[in-house]
Length: 348
Image 1 (tube, rainbow, N blue to C red):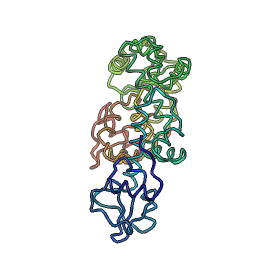
Image 2 (image 1 turned 90 degrees about the vertical axis):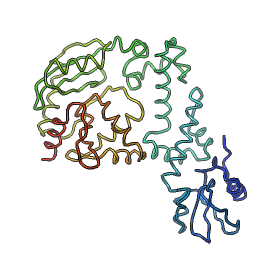
Image 3 (image 1 turned 135 degrees about the vertical axis):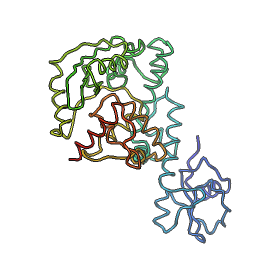
Image 4 (image 1 turned 60 degrees about the vertical axis):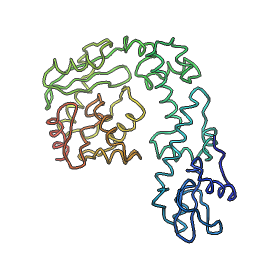
């Protein structure tokens, strides 16, 4: 663990050593060039008397300095560096107690500053990231056949009761059901005609887990069986009539905003993408690159596209509002023609 450097003398030594472990802790600015850099910058080292230190790129820029083009210590890169270091620390200590104080100490930031920077970079709080990583490890342990108790504690959960109580938000089912590939999961579903063919709606007791569009009742039913091969499926038309009515009104343009409870399984990144999609205003679109930029990960456009393709809940998570940068509709899990109709309806 790197020791946070706070004194100018210590910071200067880091600059001399080009210590990459201190990137994200501070930047140094050179009075004679008007440029500020990371501690690890490979540019020619300046004279000590010409150097000033700042806690962040924003402070250096407020003092009139510009970012070095070689080491690119801009604000996003600076904060992304912190986010990456926090994620790495969490991943290495999942089986330990991880508080904001401990995470802040690991990267040399106050708990409040850490919380703010981490949320800006990743889109989730440190606590949400810790829980998502522990759930991911729990799933891996269960798939490997570990006993449930061992899988829970190896993943860093302090008690089995906590996971069972919150399993709806974490796994979409209990750990035992997940270990059996979803066996025991009870999904009620209904199929109805709609302006785009046939609409299937599936739900657990916690919320919607499937909304699909297709050319026939058999097609959408087969889609549900493929996605949830081990689940217990029950056709229950009456119990889902109100949800179907909302979705049909939405398709007709009479109900622009949907606010329906969901029970979806996803990685932390997929959840971030889907939440961003739900914030796209009705009648508007975004490119994959714009969604990636909104997440603070401008190079993740392809990962955004994969998250859109993994969406099991059409309309409620509006992945149809994401298009290519040139305006091309690109792909859509339920057919590009349906995507075009949806966007045309919403733009009226």
